[in-house]
Length: 107
Length: 107
Image (cartoon, rainbow over the protein chains, first blue to last red):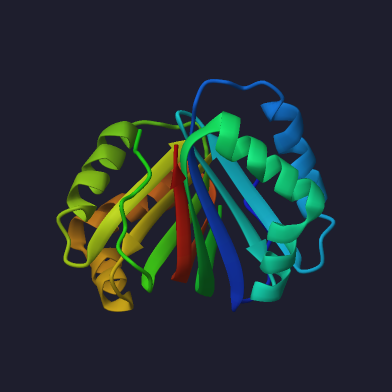
């Protein structure tokens, strides 16, 4: 469970990762937790929001495209991505987007 | 419950709406369903993905910024937004982002 990410003023980048699971969750929860922890240590990481039911949506926020590229290529992350493709996810889509504007409300 | 949206080739736009609920759900489910239905009828609408636990994330996809602006100002949507601010959401954040790249996997 995550909270609404406390991101800086735009522009910054969002990686929207949408997925459906196969139902084989062997090793999934530990790896997902570890990836959130590891992502948070990367240069340019700004925050993450993640929710999962039948459909899962994880949005991570980054300072720039180079930070996203480096995280995608991180060795431990690559191992996790491979397990995701081969075992945990029946389908997924990743979108790289430039956040141009945001607004919020806290009552 | 929604599926991974079948969006066209980038560029297009994403509206990432992240929210925490107050716990007062009076009228919420009906309105949320109606807004998904109504959004899908708007010019420029490309798809939507929505998941909700303690944190809710709804990502809607649009052809351009003008479509997003018109949807935000739609009369029935404005009534729903007001109920959201005053009753259903303790906090929320909306981010407007330009999707520059996407890739997917279906096994």
